[in-house]
Length: 175
Image 1 (cartoon, rainbow, N blue to C red):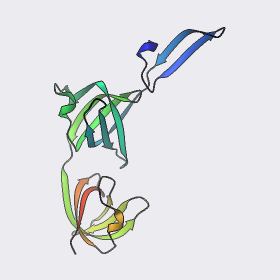
Image 2: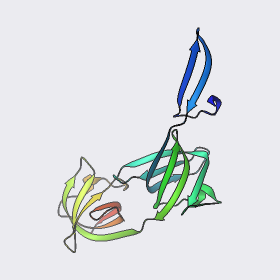
Image 3: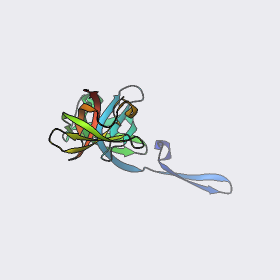
Image 4: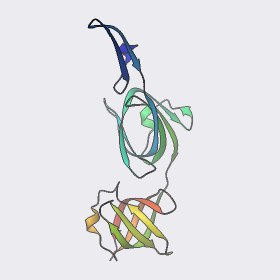
């Protein structure tokens, strides 16, 4: 029904001699997933995730949203959500309708030396104590990439996103 239309729906209006004779609404559904980096629970709740491409995305949550924890509906709803949880959610229009908690992401840290700085993409390349090369994203950090220089010995805290991609929450310069 057209009266149930929400933002993001496709609305088809049929006119006859300048008068509306029918209105049809089609709900657009989509899916997104990522790691929770920010949660706002309020009258207009929002969820920010970091997707698999390392991009931060913010979504509005429907007031009737259902939260599923490992496949089972959670009775405390949005309050079951935690930072660093891996989630998948369904969107109806532009609102999150169902949130599925998959797992929490384990924090990690390592000592490294900065070998390259790519300011245009907010990425630092660093070599750890085992000579492994890491691409370190500062997307979720509240630090400025300009604070670092090639050759800095650093301690990097955050989350390993893949075999060579790390998202940092904090970088401490050691020397």
